[in-house]
Length: 381
Image 1: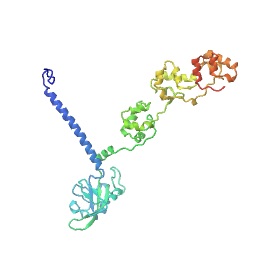
Image 2: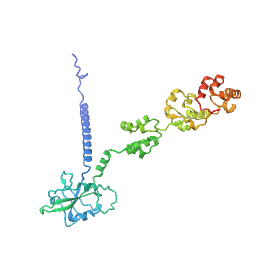
Image 3: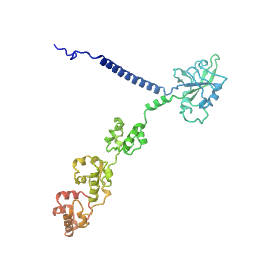
Image 4: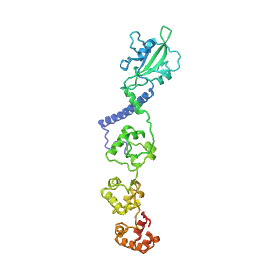
């Protein structure tokens, strides 16, 4: 009986293949471990948002001097001590005993509880002063908290100041990148909205700049679905913004050839024909008149009908009952022969009978031309 589990040629995998497979396995495991460590580190940094990297503690007799130092004169602190600018007193961790009862507390990076007034910390004007900003207050940057501590060996209670240093720039950057962004929802045109407004809508600066670069290179969002196809637009973001996307339709009675060329399937030839045919008609009365153009078929019209509109208020009604024979002959639905007959019809019929349907009954217009002309805006007799 044939052993289907054996190699077809009876050969074992080569050593290089085995080594490569094992190396790939370790690479995958290492990559997943790195992702886990990175996520855990980011979560830890975010969780320690209110815990400073360094805490400065000042004795009461040096507190006024410490508060008045500048940013460049900030005392250097380690995990075990904090040094003031005074030569008379240098407090360290050994001089502080167990804290007395206070109204609030805070936890340092080592997990120790410090007797600080919680509300004072939140309300301090020295909290988290950004780097690079000039110090105009004459006080050191950081968070200042007044606390009561025991002096070891003396048994007396003394006032001291606790001040937090800034977090590292990398920690602040990680925290900013992982802080949920505030966003707004308002109507916008993705073809013209600014980068700042895109960021207000919830996009990052990089995503907003990517959308703007696409537009600068000639890209255009014709439909809402086109905006959803952008790789920087997440599905959840599009679902939130879909009803606010407002892409104006192109008015075929006012658009120029360049604007027509932005429509799908419309090149230079059809754009020029759409403009010239509009002049012959005296203005479009309905969008389907575009299909009168040579080779402008139903398929081409279906591809753009949701992107256009026909504003008839921008054009004047066609003066069918007052134009001369020569002027009537230039209309695509009339021609020279029908123009002469219409003039005769007007001369021999009362105004109450001046209708397109009566022109068809009189045999002046064929049914196809009469139906198209009847849909046009015609001035009253």
